Length: 56
Image (cartoon, rainbow, N blue to C red):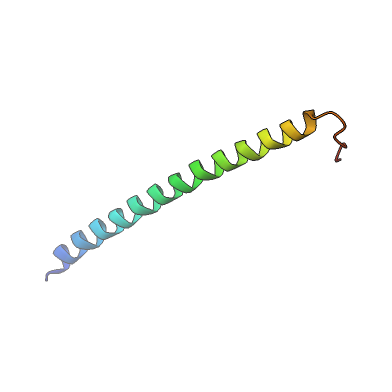
């Protein structure tokens, strides 16, 4: 394999790896945002209950 061909393959592998990484990070960020939103909603529901103690 020539140096030019090796460089071309290296760039393709790097781009494919970066694509997979970005996809995984996007999926993680989305799941984290959903989890955080649910946690905030749960906290709001618990805070709104009568007789709930204030946690500060």
